[in-house]
Length: 465
Image (cartoon, rainbow, N blue to C red; front, top):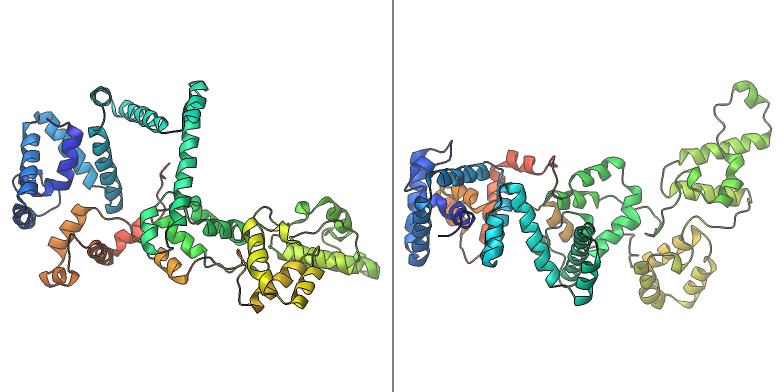
């Protein structure tokens, strides 16, 4: 006899049909007559597939052969599972299906060790132990040897780190070979920034992370781990217009006095605000002191603004002929991130005339002159500097902003049978061989359940680890 877990996996996907034979198991809140009718239709459909129907009957017979307390525990688990929201159901059912398939392939000893666990927490720990061992066996021999040399208390952390690195490599390989469209997003299911294509990560790190408001950053953080909320939130964030200067990922430009290089602090020291000045003191001020105070006010007005603060500080230094040795932003090609360096060398420079090359070279070593000239030349040749524009096509971001949560098969079945008319079902042209027909059904499901959709697209209190 199959284990209870394997039986439950069969039941949660097929139990709706069996409820036609045992209405006492019907979920609370469902009309028994409606449930009976919808299951009658489903059973008629399944009878047309003898192999499938025979397996369903075997599952039901196996369930009836269990001890009464075991039956009740499975009923309760099934009830609790379907009490969750549709998106959570879909995630848990998929996890259950994968778990059962994995459990079936284990050696008898390992399977017995898991099933003999005294409680759920111990069972989870044993599953993790076996999965780690299986994963380590697939690693290169040298890595396995290095892991074996580690103390027992350090090995789990190292395995977790190696798993994260492997996942990132797989994601990078995935995006290297897939288009930027809704289909790829649904396959990758990114729920954190590092899981998006590299050009998206670069644009966010080089530009948006410096100009986004703290509120938008917090909303993005709250959405982490939540599919598709994080993707939809990021799509909205990506609408933020970038500043009119190219930045670079390795270093943020200063936005306040304490962030200035030391030589700039010394030069601009006399131009720092000194607090409120009274009318009497102002009247006795020299013209030079009033001038410095006005410049200090201008600099203070750009506090915490990027790149405005650095630009204003540079203008003051140049206008006052103050001595500084450094620049506040990128002023040579190698000051930019590798992506931008490659663009300048391989795409922009070949298109420039001799005079344009000379004009650009004349601004090297000066900020913001060099990036301003660089930006102007790129626009002149109808080119976009990496990091200056949102990567990807508008269609990619539009598709991301409209991603919908998952809906489990059972919820879709009930929706189709109970909430749709025969004509609506016909118009949907549903087919098991057509994946797009399921997507049409999911779209219609969420159209009819806007309140639930709104709830799903809000940050959950607990996040996926």
